[in-house]
Length: 266
Ligand SMILES: Nc1ncnc2c1ncn2[C@@H]1O[C@H](COP(=O)(O)OP(=O)(O)O)[C@@H](O)[C@H]1O
Ligand SMILES: N[C@@H](CCC(=O)OP(=O)(O)O)C(=O)O
Image 1 (cartoon, rainbow, N blue to C red):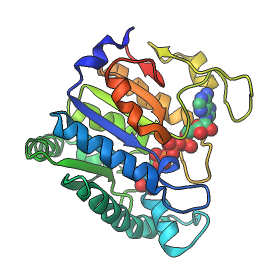
Image 2 (cartoon, rainbow, N blue to C red; image 1 turned 90 degrees about the vertical axis):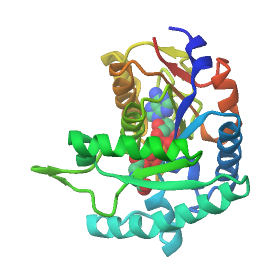
Image 3 (tube, rainbow, N blue to C red; image 1 turned 30 degrees about the horizontal axis):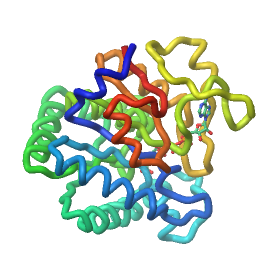
Image 4 (tube, rainbow, N blue to C red; image 1 turned 180 degrees about the vertical axis):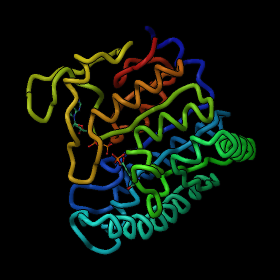
């Protein structure tokens, strides 16, 4: 278990959660989006291959329509995601353009990943986009994905999607940006004396018990879904760092092997 392997990462997936994209007042977190575009574009210029997995379609949809909470009906949530995804990509397109970085969009559903032919096709498409020097921006196709018994096309959450994309792209590292500095030994929302965990080499049942739900009203999975994603990372011999989306420039320290956030690796 050491961070030395981080220094060799060349293909990097960065996952950003809704809590880092939407402020608590429902407005867009332009600072984080701009820091993200600057950091990822400059890394791209230096020769890293970067893939961005973004949440925020529903959060931005709420912002566009001036609503303050998710509607309970699935069709309404899907409509919001459909509206928000366009605005989210428009924002990314403009902000990345400031740094002369071109972006593309991929919207995935779980069935694409499960069927070998469509999985292979998605992987080749991703490879072609990367070889053009473009940063692909990936989200779930929320407007159409469903969670039916015999037709499960939802991923569940974007933490899982981040891990799936890391494997699909055979990337060297997943950097997960949230609204917290990393994994704590207790839910920091409840315990003031919670301590940041530096390294995790295995996802044990004891560890799963320290993970609680989402901290913001816009986030979905909370820490539990991040640890589930970490399991997928370990199953495929990949590595992951969970860190704070409010300090995106620290991505540079992370790939230099410095002690930032929580490292999941062996
Ligand atoms: N053990 C823990 N360590 C860190 N955060 C935790 C823990 N248990 C619960 N959380 C909560 O998980 C939140 C991050 O998940 P979430 O709100 O879904 O963010 P995102 O939108 O980035 O996916 C944190 O803000 C924190 O409140
Ligand atoms: N695909 C959804 C995000 C789902 C999700 O997992 O959100 P988050 O917990 O903020 O990463 C959206 O774009 O709104």
